[in-house]
Length: 307
Image (cartoon, rainbow, N blue to C red; front, side, top):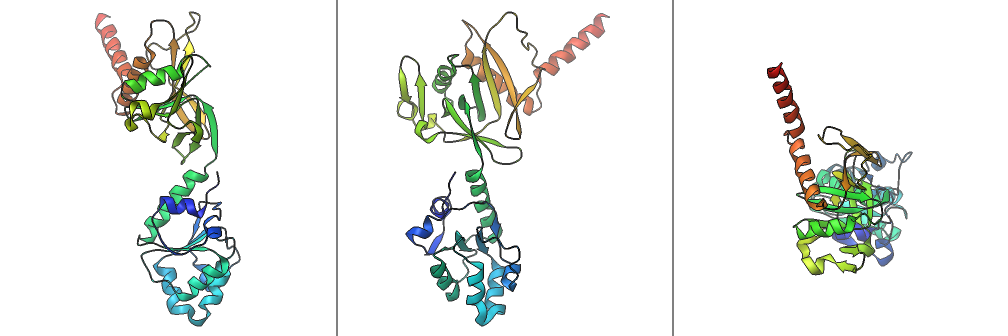
């Protein structure tokens, strides 16, 4: 995914000191942010100019109090045509030499009143999310009781119809048919719709409907964490299904393992209600209330009494 300096400005509030049309279109290719410490002393052996350059109190103090007359020449070496942006944190004043360098290199110069560490974290978090590798999976992503549920299954099994029923029951649609999945961090998996399908759902025999127009803004979300996957499959008598709920399985997306529940679909089963119950049970287990363990404890106690 291409991320530009203009995209960063839409997400995080800055005061723009210098910009141009071409500078705003510069691509940001890494989520790493450099606070030029050693670089300020002239050591550029492992310098990475393609990163955003962030100046906090330490860097600002060194530039003001130590460098002196050589400030322009040093900043000219740090800021190159590859540098997407220079950011000054804490509302610190900006040296004239830095403005001249930004204009010379056609690099956006920004100022923020936020503390340096907080600003660094916000920028990195935004870029990590936007630059993450995305994979496309087939399914319907819903927010059910605050749990991100990815509903999957073979074509025509009723995923979109189940999603519509869940929307009518007060839950929220994130994506239908195509879900773009990316890993936010080591433990977190996120999903979002393709832009062309945002807020839309396809129903065979009806066509495409706009969920936001029909059910309101409260019926949709732009993205959600994927906490649970539900796999719908045609009921087969020969198959063995988990009846106690102690057969835990997971599926891998990127490097994140996500719990999976398999639900057999057959005439007369209200799949949306079953998914709601499965999600509530999933939340209860995460809170330490395990109905399966309670049943097994009661069964063990009953066997012990009768023996």
